[in-house]
Length: 478
Image (cartoon, rainbow, N blue to C red; front, side, top):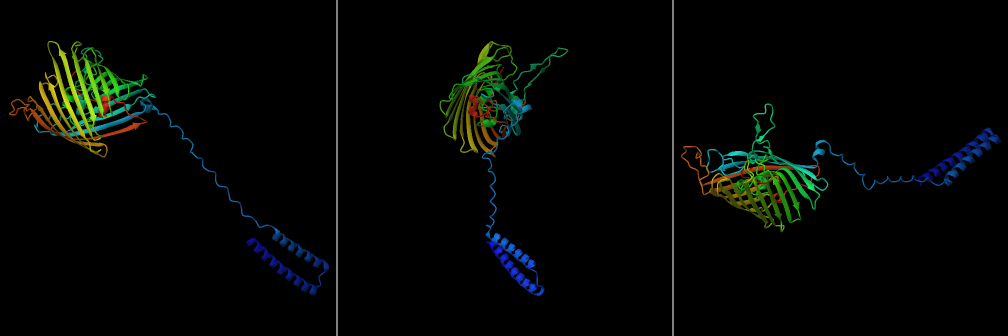
C-alpha cells in the first residue's frame, strides 16, 4: 500500500541520517572531544525517533471513508391536490352548462325564376337566385340528474328560419301607462327565442321529467335545425301539417328502455300568448321494441281559434324509424288533422312521407325523400290541392364540423300554384305552373363546448330519433 511504502522510505532516510549523524558525531568527537552528557543526549534523541517510526509501522493502515447513505426514496404517490375552488358568480348560478351553436347559410335556385325571388310552398329555404342566412343558433343547457334536479334549456335563433317560426305569434298587450288609452301592443316579443324552459327531475320511480316554458313540438320526423335532418329543405308535412312549438307544461316518464310516455298541457299551436282561455292537451308514446326499430305516436287536441273554446283541432302524427344496417336507415311519417268551424264544414289535411339514407362512411351520405300531402280545404297552404315532392340530397362533412350539402327537389301539384317569372304581377304574360324544380347548396358550421362537467341534455324520445335538441313545424294556429 502507498502508506507503507512511504513509511519504509522515511525509515531509510532516517537510518542514513543516523549513520551520518554518528559519523559526524565521531568525527566531531575526535576533533572536539564532546562530553559524555552531549553524547548521551544524542543517543536518547535517536532512540526516540526510532521508536516513533516503529509505532507508525505497527499501526493499521487508514480505512477509506464510508459510502454516504442514499437519499431517502420519494413517496410512492404525490400528495393529493387541493380541491378546486367552488364556482362563483355566473358559473355558480348557472351550474354545469353546455354551450353549443351552429351557422347555416345556403344558395337557392328555382328554375321557374319567380320575380319575387321566393320559392313557393317552402319553409326556411325560401330564397331563389340568391344567398340566404337560414339560421344562427346559440344554445345553453344544464342537464338534470339525481345530484342536481333542476336544469334549463335556452336556445336563441337568428335568420329566416326564426322569422317564420315565430311569425304566427299574435300581438300581446303591454302594461298601460298614463293616459291608459289607447293600450299599446308589441309583436313577437320572443322573436329570437326558439326555446326557453326550466326542467325538473322529480324523485318518482325512475325519474319524472317536468318542463315548463317554450319548447318545440314532439310531432314530425324533421326538426327546425337543418343539420339534424336527412335533407336540407323541409318537407311538406313539416311545413303544413304540424306546429313548430308550444308554450306550457310537458312531463315525461321512461318506464324502461323500450317504453316512454310524455303528456302536455299547452296554450296551443305556435303561440306563447294564448288567443283563448282553452288549453291544448296531448301525449307522445315512444316505443323501441328493438335496437333497430323505433315508433313514435303523437296526439294533440284543443281549441285553436281566437276567442273560441268550443271548436277543437285534432292532430295525430306517427313516425317509424328503422336502422337496417350501420349504413342504411329508413323512416316513414304519417299525419292527419281536422278542425271544426262554426257554420261551415270541418276542414282536414293529411300526408305521408318516406325517407331513405345511405352513409357509406362518416364523411359521405346520400338521402332521398318522397311526400304526398292533401290539403282538402286549403286550410294549410291556402289552396285546396294535392301536392307531392321528391328530394335527393348529397352530403359531405369537412374538417369534422363543416356540413355541406347539394340538393335537388321537384314539387308537383294538381293546381297551378307555383309562380313562373312575373306571373304574380297583374297583366303579366306568364301564368303560374303546376311544378317547380329547385337546387340548394348549403354550408353549415357547428361547435359545442362544456362549462364544468356535463353528461348531455336529455332529449325527448322523438328528438333522439334525429339527435337534435329541437323539433318541428307548422300550420297556422292559436
